[in-house]
Image (cartoon, one colour):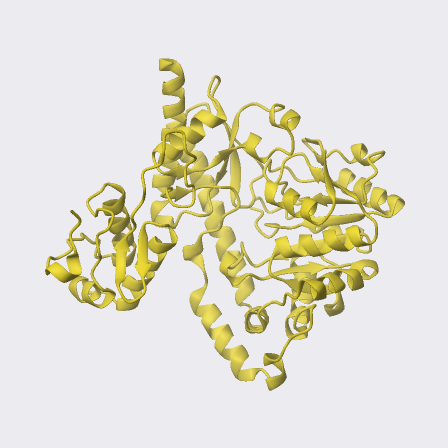
Length: 472
């Protein structure tokens, strides 16, 4: 029977690294839950009690508890404390609850949440609230606060080459909302089909379909989207990731960019540019926004998710004049509005130069991780190729002969590692079968002190899959 640590008077033994007490507390509690030392139904000590026992701040203990609650390992009961979550044994053949059973998450495109610029953001929030007029706290305009749209337009022009003024910017909850608004606006004017890259986010294709547009896959090659395939498809728009195709990692070549702009003008079509990680190019050859060569045909989309944090829920679109009113009408119909205080804080962050500093720091960290990932893979899996542009938060790992993506996924899941194969991003079965087995590895999410462990898990998953195939 599970012990009630708080009520029984028993101590909770946790070994901490004195140099990194909070991080080691999180690791120790997670490990104790995973290996069964803390059984389901065990009540943990109150945060105040554990903080005193361990000599760390109560808020730090509360933060660790909250993270493990978010992972599904602990359960916070109102008025009753924090408990190890009761988990029913799954029936044979039942699907795995992927939201709660993975200790390491290496899906492509996830940033390191531990790198959030907390102090800079706190200063920006305090400064913006102190300086804002009373009108800033009323219901806002559907396009977002002008206090953010103006500096954001200047920032995008300076850092990504975007052609924009404050009136061109629409602030959203993220790229997903922007994509939905634009797709619904295109559908409302009679559009029915939209071209998408053969590999990409299934969630984006689902958003387009929900808006009433049929996603039509277009092949990719070493130069990116095969633009010549757009002719004759009868599409009203195209969704692209030109700076760093997700997830294959190839940029859209300069000739293809020109061809895409020409096609959009001739067809009267809209290009939706997802610049999801354009600020993270590591080889010194930054690729500017496609929008700059066709501003009247292109919706440029970006977010603060990679540069700051997904938790902020802030995205933006630079919308052409001919589509702006229809996009704003869809925003009004949705009843949505972006948090005004976060908008003001982001404006203050930009004005202080802290967003530039955050991006520069993150770029250096992710570049070092990409280099370390390649080195550790070369040592652990000799002859295995790491592919994809040296940019962003993910890369491709081409698997050894005879090793399949699903085998690696299963081997990874067995040791608490979550990541997937390239076929899982394919828009159709034909595309999924067109490339050799390859894993999409996100090196952004693991905190720095767990990065080597994460790469070791990747190596173990590939070796485990190879071993099971050999023994089978």
